[in-house]
Length: 231
Image 1 (spheres, rainbow, N blue to C red):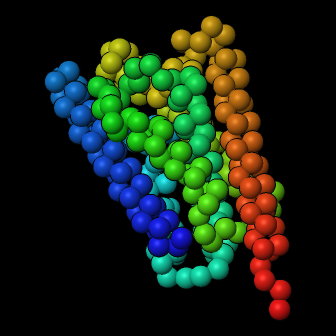
Image 2 (tube, helix red, strand yellow):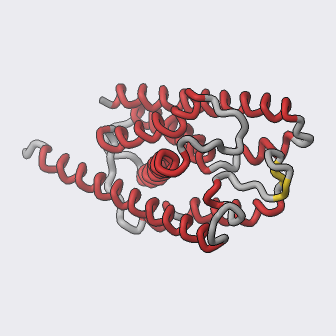
Image 3 (cartoon, rainbow, N blue to C red):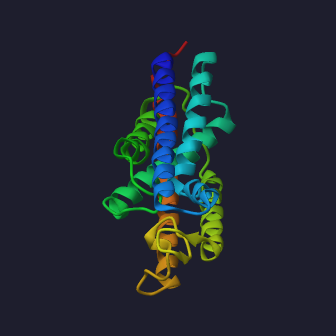
């Protein structure tokens, strides 16, 4: 099982990296053809997507996790268990939000690369679910881990909302670049009130997903303890 999941983690990490690079290449070609004057702004915008950041974090985490599976036995180190729960939360949330709110909507990264889009928004998030259900090395963590998991999304939301009004959007030739439509107060019926609603909703989803993963880890640990032989 350890070797199997090490291989799976490496495979998904490689797929994620390939998907990010592939989408970036397609986007760069699109921006160049469109005549964007400052590709550096476009590239920074590209890497400002929550999806891109969470997938990069997932690729790094899965690569580390593969090494840990091959090198050791027993439960994961606590630091890695926390990291894995956080990354799994972000990826699962990415999958939920994209497939419920954003699928079929053209996002401002340029032309979308189909297979890359599916890897980043469906395949990788689904794998993280499988990994948390069955991968060896499971370690139970306290509920307060939720407080750690919400730090990055809060920082990302603040960064996005503070930066957006001062960032040029080559797609509309106006100031104000937002990675997702529901974060743009101009496009929302109730302005920043609608934006605040979606931010709070996503925070609730992230907290709920984290809580679910923590419960799952605790359940797996209890089941493993019951199944352990008595001497």
